[in-house]
Image (cartoon, rainbow, N blue to C red; front, side):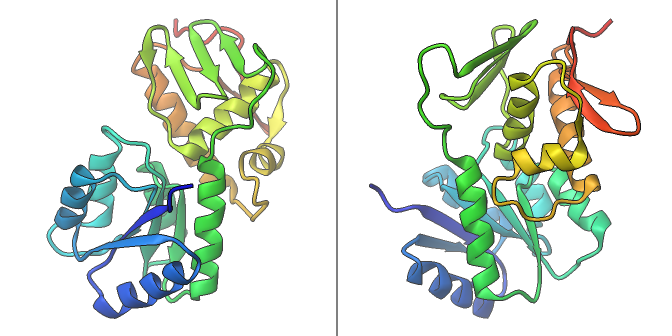
Length: 233
């Protein structure tokens, strides 16, 4: 099995050294970039399995790097930031991040978060033929291949967005409250705020609305369910 490759992006040399040591000790392969532009160059040369991405950096900040990556890639992204306000966390997740860790943090917590994000990024276990494919109108999801389409167009979802949509599509007609949906979409069972979950759902809906589809219906006062007819009027 090939070594998991993680790109650590931060302008703080000491922090990169601490993170590199913690990850290397766990058996991960680690590359480094000191700013956003260098990170994009490194990923263009060699894709990574996960990116640890500082938000506040010179040249190109982490949010801009994330925005650029999400145009072509669904690589898992774990944001690091000294700003812990919930609004900043929600913004990072809405940009396409998969998790957000506030500085200062313990190396043990960082490793735990990375493991959880990588678990969510793994393809679903192999199933009997036909059991891994789900259809809702023009939307088709293949859990085994970890791919989803709107008609003939493939939609690029982040790992977390894919898991949320998969939960909804596997049980059409069921209304999920936010806690139930988060429990199934986040297998590490960590606490996920309602605002965080809502941010991921908004991104799912936005990506499909570009194709005149919307797979998610809001159940007011409760949560969400799969829309019976995803076509927009």
